[in-house]
Image 1: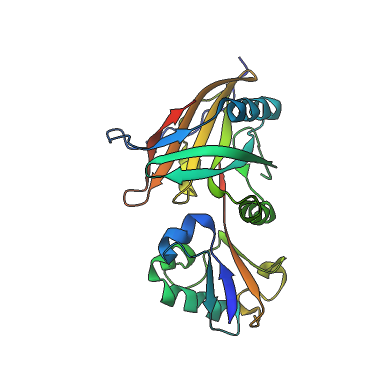
Image 2: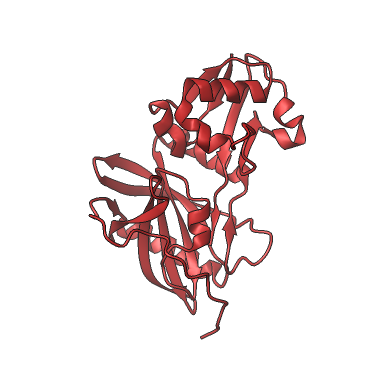
Length: 90
Length: 159
């Protein structure tokens, strides 16, 4: 099961767990499984159509999925997936 | 004073609420942040801070300046590269501290959260804003997002 690292601001929605093991062969499936396990994450990660929000970046190891196969990027049991919220303002 | 276009005036915070949260900023941390933000001027400077939390109190123990990666006018906007964020989270584990917030500056503008600050604000973090006027640090404020009403709540700063 791939491990998803939850960014600090969203850990309140996972019972303060920093890492969640997920089922799924792709990022799409893993994130879907994550939001099933912790439904309060859903609005922060997915838009109304169930797609990953554009301002949420996802890394597999050190690789941004935008440079891989995006949501169809395959994940293995050994994969470490990191969710990165957009931090911006001014 | 060099005029920079005003940020959009929109209410971004709750005007009447019980301010029962505290962010403690030790003097050495305060001086570090002020110096960094003055050096960044006239651009917005930005960084993360780490520390401990108990009940309604947070204390900053360490800061991590990061690059303002905004592709555009850095005098009015900041953006953090996702890879810098990733590294910042890893530092929290390495240092054994909680990542508790973000500081950034408002060059020649009040330390009041803008609509842009609110738009992408995330829960949990304390958002520290410093007003830097003509290159000199002035006011400090700190805010946390109330997700229910999508407005900031001001924290008490202990400087």
